[in-house]
Amino acid sequence: MPTTFLPGPVRVRVPATSANLGPGFDALGLALGRHDDVTAEVTGGGVRVAVTGEGAGELPADERHLIVTAMRATFDVLGAQPAGLALECENRIPQARGLGSSSAAIVAGVLAARALVADGEQRMDDDAALRLAAELEGHPDNVAPCLLGGFTIAWTEPGGARAVSLPVAPAVRPTVFVPAERGLTSVARAALPATVPHADAALNAGRAALLVHALTTDPALLLPATVDRLHQEQRAPGMPATAALVGALRAAGVAAVVSGAGPTVLALSQVPVGFEPGTDWRRWELPIDVSGARVIRGRL
Image 1 (cartoon, rainbow, N blue to C red):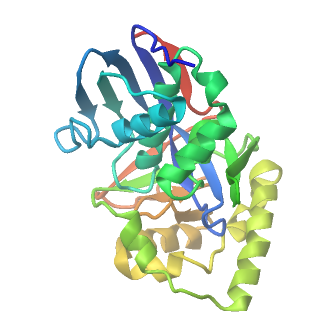
Image 2: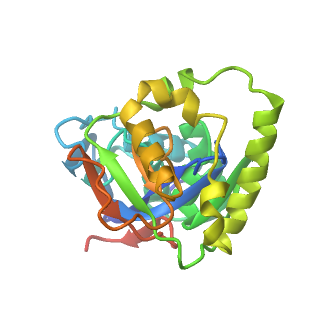
């Protein structure tokens, strides 16, 4: 069956995400109310990418852009490649800070490409979109909340990634502390040991289970629920300022964790009035994005 590309632009809005959430390494994630907007259109030839906001002047403006890579992979699944593409990216998610900027780009590319094909949703349903996005990203803990919104639990089966989204208790109001410095997930993962003690694995399993209850039902338990032994201490030497801020917040009774691979810090419970992380941090109080990625036909 031939592939028909739709005329005119589509717009995709994708949320920032925070993964791991302490003990939920590579499994738990949260969608946050800070968004990138991508407008994409099929053209007669060539690839043009215009970026404003975060990453402007730094990100590739051609085929090398991650959104284009994700779109190309999606078009391959859908059966044909368009002659050309034009993208406009309004970025508000900081790059390489642990807030899911790469996952947002991948999800935006997958959904934009699907929306530009006449029967795209019939050829690739939401479950297939998640599987492809996770395959492109390498793991599903950020792409799942970006796609589904809310608090997500993601896992991988032989057939690919799967995820569920759960409602978050109204009292959970995240705050993120974003540093000027950047971090790379590949570097953070390289700091992790190949094996962990059985006791640490058991502790994390219990705290991850408790975290599901704390986020959905009883936020009073968030501080003990965010204890981690698998990745944060191991990564601390590579981002000492992040580790120090997490420690200071937790000492003040705040359920603070490293956001994703860092260096951003995520606070899941209320930060005391007057707490100051220092001048090197941007502080944002962000709502939870309950909708996930959204596709809008045409420009606003």
